[in-house]
Amino acid sequence: MLPTYPESRRRAFARNLLRNGLGLTRGENLLVETWSATLPWAINLTAEARTIGARPLLSVKDEPTYWRSVTEGATSQIGRVGDHEWAAISASDVYVYLYGPLDTVREESLPQAAVRRAESNNHELMRVLQKHGVRTARWDLGRTSELWAKRYGVGLRTWREELISASLIDPQAMRRAGRPIGQKLETGHTATITHPNGTSLALRLARRHAKLDDGVIDQEDLRSGNVIMVVPSGVTSVTPAESYAEGTFVSNATGVLYAGNRETPLTPGRWVFEDGGLVGYDRARAGKELGQALSDLGNPRVPPGQISVGLNPRISRIPLLFDQERGAITFEMGRNAPMGGRNRSPRLMAYLPLRGGSLEVDGEPLVRRGELVTG
Image (cartoon, one colour):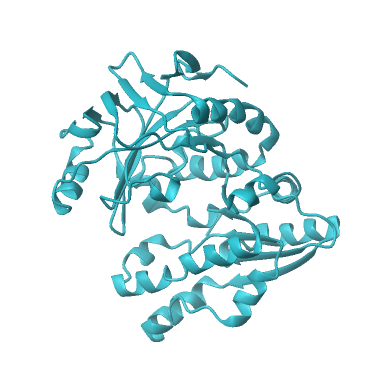
């Protein structure tokens, strides 16, 4: 079970997300989908929508009933979405999904066939959201568990507190900080990441669009196909040229490895690049998981994938959102096509963040010793 949070915090969350983040207005349709653990938060979202003058619809997934259906029902029915649910999503102007289930231990014990079926509609959901321009936000308080907290080395209470407080940030402040950084990453030629810990990595920029996740989905985002955001937000990123990476990147914060259908925490480690590909890594630290994944894929050449700068001042310990800590520089390698790059192989993505580092574009500092130079 989740703790009981004050009504004032739930109302503040709903107000900031709907008004400042998603721009819900009078007469618009709001769909809120929640699991039972986060129902109190969903109720506040619908109440705020009524205050705005919008038309909310609440859909609830009861977790005990879900697990009963998984145990007693046919595997073929897992993940099935009816036409009426697709119709509700298509007819919505704004869609908020409070993610679940909360029992991640039980979820991880499911057979792979059931997991694949549960995730089988992800591509169709994205297609429908983009087709109809549905402004969408996902929030993961209902996924916080002791298992994952231990896995990522964070206190469960701290994780949950940051998920809430970082979602109450006025997104305009992150927008003001992130836009000039994104512009430099789009128009620059070279990027250099340095740190006294031995990091010195040179990359080439490819004049590609820099994505800004600032906690707002507006018309500009919709025109670019950016219809969904994870809350809390706060990062600007770009995919560099995949053909060039020279030097060493030494992380000092936990990252993530995605290989196949697996998501594995990566402890801080050292990556060495030459001629645009990974040639060495710290086998004593982050190397075990990475080495196994590379071996399974036939030890392919792994190019640079993405660089990003964090913008949210209230993030420091949230699993999978480490890259959004204000001033953090994150380097990702491997497959980057989902982020706007050109690399589809190998089917591996890994990223490690760097705190206290510096980032320069064409010799101009954007981040200096962990502090944003602009914004």
